[in-house]
Image (cartoon, rainbow, N blue to C red; front, side):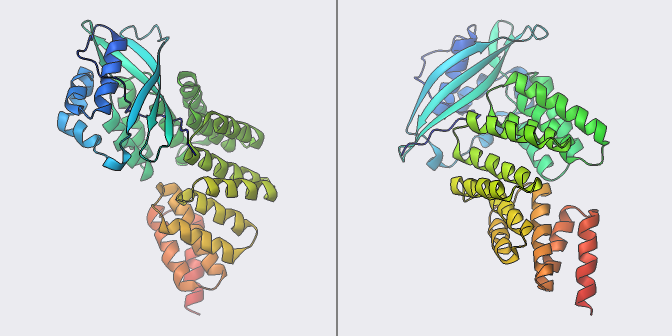
Length: 362
């Protein structure tokens, strides 16, 4: 059966062009995409903006695009390219949206939706590129350095005022960073998530982001509405899976156990390789006091690649709590210490550690 995937990507394939007319932004972008498909990254690097070259050398650019050969499509087609209306505040920029289709070696058909920003440099159009800075920001975010993440995202926005992913990441930083006042967090989450959606209204992840805002102001119904909208927009099974997992958490919070189970089971059926899905499955079972089953789900999550620090902390702490309740004090201590390595000041984790150590000495 063919699978159809919609998401944000950078590489596409089209028919090769003999020369690049960089006075024509449409032609420039088509060639840039074509070079990506053919892995002509040296030529591709020539077509990024001057400011982009300042933050990314050719060597860094080539390293960024190193990917296993197994991920290479056997055929690529540009389905559409559309110029979008750009803001009056940025007359030297143009925006485009492209849809492409890739045929993989297993005959899966993958469809992609992407947004691009081009900049005019003395009548020569160039692609604005900041992938390496985004990569750095994601590492900082995953490690809980939210101020550092925001600074890097602001650097991206200075290069590209239409970089929706950077605004989204800033919003998520305020969601995670509890050192800021709640009012400030809510204000800046909403501001950034609304702007993100205005830039890219058909990208599913942005509605997941807006759902996080409604979680912080405790409007569960609007969380669910945004998850459902994201699911409707998405054709990517893995993307849909985490949305179902998120919905399970909302239903659990509202004590709707039936819907919580239905959604987490749907999530795992769509992607059984996700640490997040197994973690959330364990949480649903833990809530029902099904400790043995929850422990198994948490162990599956622990065996898989780690999540961002905030989620991995939750996994380790939850597993430690289960082990403590089941009188497996050695494992409980091991995993609460792992949790505290990720968040040393968490009061609940410190309290659980004290309980564990007290019982071990009795």
